[in-house]
Image 1: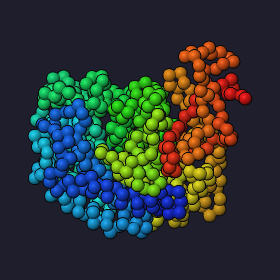
Image 2 (image 1 turned 60 degrees about the vertical axis):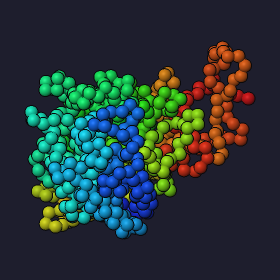
Image 3 (image 1 turned 30 degrees about the vertical axis):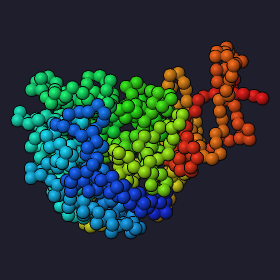
Image 4 (image 1 turned 90 degrees about the vertical axis):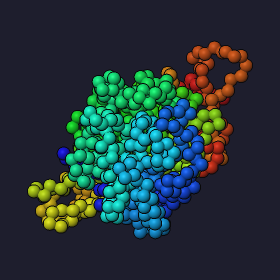
Length: 629
């Protein structure tokens, strides 16, 4: 199998200019955000949880035999994943160019080692590793893969261990997690004496693919393939049912979580188990789960890559907000089955757009691009990053958003929270910024032909060093004014006789791309775009919206202390009135002393104080609906 570098390792070859847009953001995350998240984990209890001592939070929605509850899962059920992602993120920053400017480096190193020591001691002799089903509900071990996240948590711990191994060279953490994977392999698989389960929340699939890239152990590749192939399969030895339905019947579970309530076929679309992956033609259910699944599928390649492309295209073409956000239905944090049903707010019928969903879309996009450059996929990845992903964190590094609605409604506000009961998004955001160099581009070396192939995915001011045969090095320097301007140029260096092949997909938002070749192995590209453009929004309930963007960045109105600019004229009097060409249904009225509409980049919304109200899409107003005094 072709093993292509993952951004979780290739990032280290790239140094992002510390004075650039992304360099400054990464400094914020290295110095403030990671520290904020570490403090919050200690405050929450997840940091100390691997000591396997009782915590008062365990009494909240306590489980018995892992049976489902209608009032949601226990709040501590995801703690391993939060810790795993924080370790992963910290290792990326400590081993990258940001390490020299990380003022809390020693504290982070101490915390990482303390966590790894606790994790090692918490592991069972047989390799099992889970806090909740060790301390609170031992009877529930492996009884509810659908809801209880044993595999999901293990996947994030495994990714943390891979980052720790890459950073430190130590085998302490990675050996713990290999033993944990061996425990899963023993109990789950296609054989008659095994359970035929798979993660309710995909994650272990993609983590095991990454493990295989390190160990080259065929059993790890086989297990990843099993997890992909078993999902949604109805088996005779499961009474003709899929695993999650059979599992629920076995434990005599008559209820399921509120997130799956009302979904067809006992909620199987929620976790993408309604059909085998090869038979799924529409992306459905919980959006983060769906994209984690397609990330693993794209990484595996072959027919699974076709599955990933098909579902990714459905998401981008039919179910993506203009900000690169995904997920219309707040109730289950997922996709509407109706194409182009993308309401802006609660008052318009929903909107969720979880930060993790856009991060996961970037993950899938990068794995698709690792096979071959595709401009559409590149554009989607860039759109997600510049808007929905970066918008998940405040500019002071102390606030985070889980959902990212396009517009507030009523008393809703778009201000960020310092932490969440289920806090998957903040550390996910940190690890994404930590490995950003790996998302920026990919490089392949053909030693026989002396060709260096460079595929550019993101326009980021950075330098990449590429190892050549016989210990030689090549280097490419990219200097970009993105996201504020379209000018980018590259300077390349390589030993005599080497040739560069550089692929730069044309962004969809660019009117034309002018590429110039300059002396001294310098390549420049000017990507001219309008300062702003109006784009057709999604039609929802026969209402047409217009959104505004510039470059790959979307603008929105964000209330500050100045207030709004344009309002609908309020009609008083009778409950009904006649509507005709001279009396339109909606009349827009400009407030006094205002002549312009100020737009704020989506990622920077709700950082100025004020009421915290936002709107991204605007109702279309024709000439007849404008009030003229």
